[in-house]
Length: 188
Image 1 (cartoon, rainbow, N blue to C red):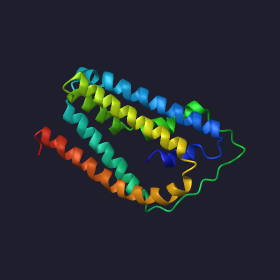
Image 2: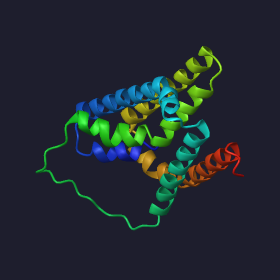
Image 3: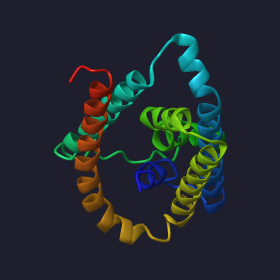
């Protein structure tokens, strides 16, 4: 659901074809980034001597800070940003890459989670299950982006409520990751 707001923002005023292109390219870029993270992440950690609990701690801190920022932003007054029709739209690939693929769909803590899950997987079957879950998540993101316009009224009602609840849950999840990593490191 977190993709919907940014997707509406970057596709504001775009026609259906451009909107679809942005959604597809953002999904492709995201999937490729997660594939690279899954394939290379563990070897990169090993080459720099970074233990998995340190990566989990970093991911937890980032998740906590991003989620806390999101929760606190709800208390700030809305800043209207009217679209200037005289400004040419950004190229499809640029918009799909940033801000949609990075950091909205593929977050730093999401990359950390993929690297950790692949590193602790016990078999090729486990790794394939992780890959299948990532493919399913990417497919759901694409479906949500493609359906966003037709469900705009529903999202306008549901997203603020869901965002408030999930924001607090994400803050707690970030703290749980930090706690778990500190316990694995023997700090707590």
